[in-house]
Length: 113
Image (cartoon, rainbow, N blue to C red; front, side, top):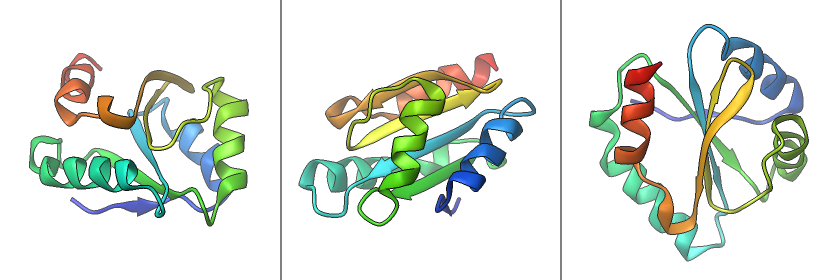
């Protein structure tokens, strides 16, 4: 599994639209934060548990802060860093931040979709 980069508000709009066909996830990461680095590492160690056709997007918050702001506005989820969001049918159906980020918490939600 590979990260897909999220780099623009137009791309975010396309992802929200695509979430009507299948769930997608966005990981918001701060490259200056040790907690964010720990969460990133935990996700990457557990990638094999995710379905192979699942799209997981990586957002570098320091480079693309306007995209993070658009996520908060469009999906009604308060900005956190790090943060993992599951988007289904145009809405954020799950989000976790800091040490609560866990692939094991996300997996049952994907199986229910």
